[in-house]
Amino acid sequence: MIFTSLISRYDGDGVANDTEWPGVARIHDGLISGSGVLLASGLHLLTAAHLVDDLILANSVVVFETASGSVSRRIQAVEDYPDVVLNSLGVWHDLALITLEQAAPLTADRYGLYAGVDELGQTATLVGYGQAQSTSGVILPEAGATRRAGENTIDAIGTSLARYGWQGSLADQLFYDYDDGTIFRDALGDLLGISNRGLGSTEAMITPGDSGGGLFVQHDGDWQLAGINSFVTRWPMTDLNTEADGSLGDIGAATRVSSYAEWIETRTGQLQTPGANITAPPAINAVPRQVQEGQGVWFLVQLPGPATQIATVDFSTRDGSAIAGQDYISTHGVLTLGLGERWANVWVQTLADNLIEGNEIFSLVLTNPHGALFPVGQTELTAQRTILDDTTLAGLTQLVGELFG
Image (cartoon, rainbow, N blue to C red; front, side):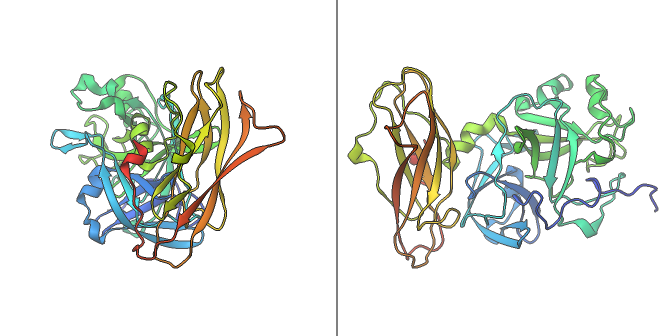
C-alpha cells in the first residue's frame, strides 16, 4: 500500500547521535526498549514504571548517545513510585527512578525539574526513542533506535477528562493530542470543546519506545522536565484508525513531574532543606570532614543567630583532586533561610569505583550572599571534604536513604 504522506512521528529526520538532547537515553534489555531522562545528579534517570517493570534488569543497559559517541551504563537499582498502579483499570503514577552503577558521561545533559503548575497550553518538546511511523500508523523500521524530538501542545490536565469516566491520579497527568490542522483529528478539542488544531508540520506524538521519554518546556531559557511520557489512548471520533498507536487523532499522556518533585529530590539527594528554626544547628564536631567512597556527605551552612530577614547564598561544588562526575556528583543552587531559620545541610553524593586513587578532596563554595554578610574581606566561603579511597568496591555507589529523609 502506498501512502501519500509518509512522515516521522516527529518532524523531519529527528535527532540522532549528536549534541541535541544527549541526556535522554535509550533503556533496553535486548528485547524491550524505552527511554529515560537524566536528572541533575548525573546518577539517576526518571522513566516510566511500566517500562522498567517489563525489563529484565540483569540484562538491561542505559545508552547515552552524545557528541563523543555512544556510552552505556549498567543499572544498579530501580525504584517505582510507591503508589504506582499498572493494571486493567488504568496507568497512574507511572514513574520510576533508575540509579546507575556509574555516573553518566559529562557530555550527557542533566535536566532540572519544572516546578510550575501552568503547563496547560504550553508548547512542549517530546524526546525519546520511539519508532518512527507514517501518519496512518505504519511503522518505519529503519528508525527504531533513533532519538527524535518534536513539538506538541499540552492540551489538558487529566482532571478535565473525569466527566468521561477517566479515573486515577488525573491531576498528575498531562495530555496532548496528535493534530493535523483539521477539526476531524482534534481529539481533545472535540472532547473538551476547546479547539486546538496543532502546530502544523512540527506536531509530534509518542509511539512504542517513547515510554519514559521526556516532555520538556522552556523556563528562563533552560529546558526543564515537565513530564515523563506514559501511554497513548484514543477517542474513536477522531482517531485515524482503530489502534492507539500514535497515529493522527490519538491522545498521549505524560506523568506530571511537578506532582512528584519532593519524592524525586529526596530520593536523589538533591533536596537542600533548611533546618527547623526551633532546633539548634548540629555541633561543629559532629560535622563530617571525611566520607567513605560511594556515600553521601553533608556540609553545614549556618548563621550566628536566627535570620531576621530572608537570607540567600549561592552554593556550588569545586573540584580538588576529586573530579565531578568521576568522584562525586556536582551540585549547585541557591540556599534560602527564611525568617527565624538559622542553618541548613547541603548534601553531596560521592561516587564509588574500584580504582587505586588514594584519598581525594573537593569543596563546597558559598558566594553572593543577600540578607546576610560574609566576614570582612571575604568574597566566598569554602569547606573541604576528603573522599576515602576504597579499592574493594565493585563500581557500586551506595545511596543511604536516611541521609535524604
